[in-house]
Length: 158
Image (cartoon, rainbow, N blue to C red):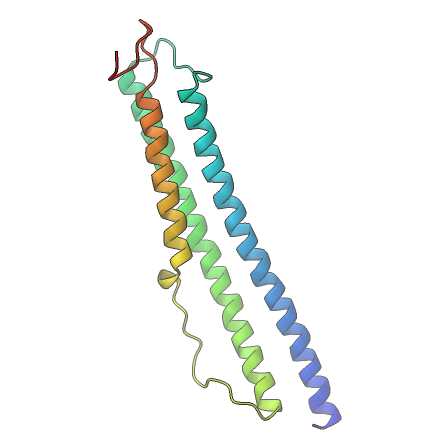
């Protein structure tokens, strides 16, 4: 390898490391937000079931509609965030692939030819995160449905 090729390789290597750090940071951000959403849903459910959160003098229909709106808003925002972060990761991964391909052309190694092809909708982690959010939303809605009535009984169990 000539000095120029070595300099180019080192520059590409530095860019590759930077892209990889950005990918790792985006993945950490993705999971941190998911854990924050899940923790909030669980905390709200626990507060309702534990009697720490009360809905005094509100009709049950209004409580349930408000809870459904909150769940819809939270899950929709989570799905939109996951889509945005996966798009961003897709761009970073494509850049990383291009850098590695360019580095492979400077040294005699075999690297896959063609175009980078990793689809957002094929990311299993996205479906897992959405499923967890939906399940915890169902738990939250169930907890809300157990809100104490004014007479001291529990809805559905009095």
